[in-house]
Image 1 (cartoon, rainbow, N blue to C red):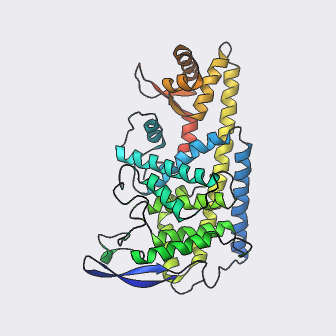
Image 2 (cartoon, rainbow, N blue to C red):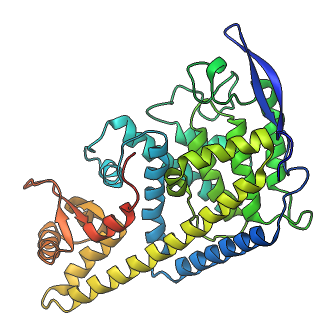
Image 3 (cartoon, rainbow, N blue to C red):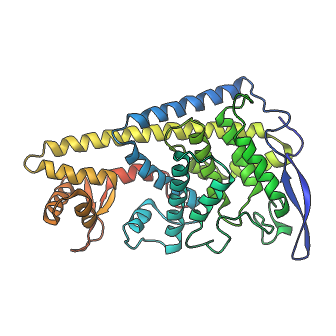
Length: 389
């Protein structure tokens, strides 16, 4: 449906230059979303795919193991959209206090993303509501170190920002002036807590609309894109759609960047929420299906490698203990295994050598000391689609 523009324009003055800044109207859209037959089918398919993902995650031997790796994969993908060149291996090396293979600012930015997400989920589990205060807390973690750490972490901006271009006058889009931010974000928070008893809007649609609204408001000086993508996972988790935050659309948005930006603009200029919702629901279905398949593949790989080790003869119990740690941390050092698994260094070294000979693990450094090992198949499955832009 084509409505009028989904907001109004306000004049903003930056460095003596007068520009038209866009102030979005409060959600939900007026008139309300059209949920015709085809769109209803998309919603049902996306909901079903999320249900399957939620079920498979609960059936995993250790759901937290999958969550640990998947969160880090998402951190890499979301940060790549912002221009970083970090890989999943870089992030895991950084967490090991080893030197990653990219500029330090890149990998610090990805690490910050992991901290922000983990903080948000932990707060929700404590019973803290999804609200603007929580977003500001997460923003502190997101901008704690590296690039952007001097751009008011945890505070809504007090100056005009813009997207694209070298100044507001030639920008692709100019978000609301700072004096409109409080009202815009308060209205968005109110929309999150409109329950289905008061509205017919499912959580999935609420997440779809909220993402666009947050990106349009652009309330922080930096980090809006990453936090806007995290908001989707938080809304689905908080709304009870997913018990674990395992649905991340960064790869889908990365693969369809041009369409993504075009549809955001169409919402703003034409009020075409329906085209955006169709795109979003297709992305949810595809992404949830892919995450489910990834979980199944990892379970199969773990099972096959466990069986190979168990039938490997003498010493298999100790090799299995090292392998169990490698499942939890697909890139790790012998020092880490010794301190966490409670075995001696010679035992860990011998067991890891067995895993290398079996083709399950591979040594990365080529050094005699401080060696780092990677569970190749595991990392390769997680890395699919994660090549730097």
